[in-house]
Length: 370
Length: 225
Image (cartoon, rainbow over all chains, first blue to last red; front, top):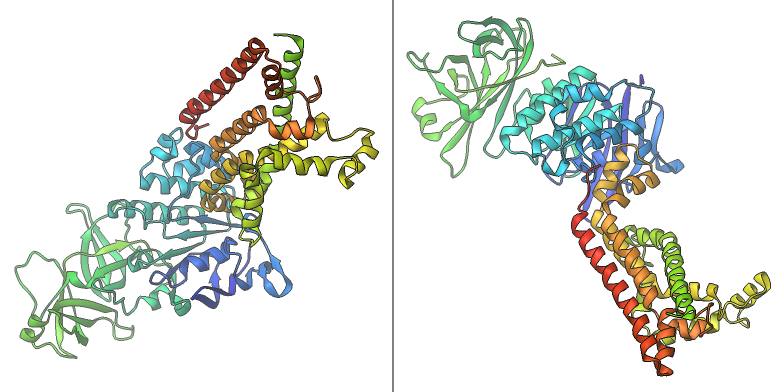
């Protein structure tokens, strides 16, 4: 149980695809595995679970070997202590919801984590679904049952393969909430694969970025997200913040970001002193050269322009702002997407002082590692 | 119906039932292998399995007769072992029927297993089900229609065989004379009334079985336990 890490040193080739990496994964917290489709994320997860038999190399949980091609060791999937949540749920259609959960429960080892049937049903609010047919469930319900089923195998590690990809956007947040709750409630370490930077940014303590079958970066979330991410047209910034006070009257929570304050609608779960993670889309940030007065936007952060990137043949430019803050700490970076026309009208250049107006921010759970 | 006809009827159903049981035991692993393997042998085995569909029963029966005769290694070995000949015996008929009905067992099963696909089996493996456990608790229940179809087709097809039986088993009352042979003999000896009776029994039986299968198949979409 007290293994220090999951060591994966594998090579996998088929057709024109290849995956090659040698990484250690922590056995606690949530590790996000992120990259474009075809980068090898799912193949990595399948290799770890034992579903992919073509992987060569070595996979070890602590000193327990799951794969060692050199000495012809291959532990089959059903004897590896991991659970796997598929993008398409893969519930058994010949069993009811309860039947699916019991299937996992019956085969779970009696030692290890004690997660009872009732625990899983309660944590995932499955009570009303138990007698239903799996084919009558909505996508979100299917994924909830699938989560419960993986939980009941009492695994040491939970592998999640794009668990939200098949859901419509309104259901995604709900499932994300359950995944977080499972992690918090049962202390289950997770490897979470997604092509969505937003999901990874909201969940992960550690991030592995894959590109074309190779590791592009691997580090703690705080480091990985410091510069935000540049996506097609959805750049994001991730900021660490702390709940400084909650305002019951207006249902607002005040958050401190690099010594400055902003307010967000107050989710019931927030308490003063909580560390939280802020996600800000670049297109939700406007810039001004003087402090704006009489606007409905309440959240204004000050900083200095770090860099300006104008997009070719486009109306837009992206400005990276280093937020003002205590001089001893690294400056958090905030990305803003504005039109090139306003960029030139404001005459923004490196080093200029700017006011960043945040239209909306997403807030999520505590950052496990500063 | 006279006692000879009754005994032909009994023999036919005993042969069909035994053939079906034997083929479930042999055909299920074969069908599973065919549906999951990436071996280059697969098309060879598939072609061999389908052979009884296209070969004239007399050709199959002729080869079987040679194979099972006491002068062949297999037939000789059997004779030494049991002091009985394989040809013109129930055991010989059984071997012949198993080979002759093989595609009717294997093909529906293989199609059903292929329809189940890898996804549920992978899910079962990640839920700690060993391969055999996963087969019985996931693949087989999901293939229920295919299993039913395979069993009924095998049974019905064995009841209806004629050529192979005639070649391998001949026409010994009580031992190898099955319904189809009995009907043939009634017609040859111009006892049309007897032929009518026996034929009608077979017709009604065959229709009822197929009707039951098609009805069940419609009502059997993956029952929730």
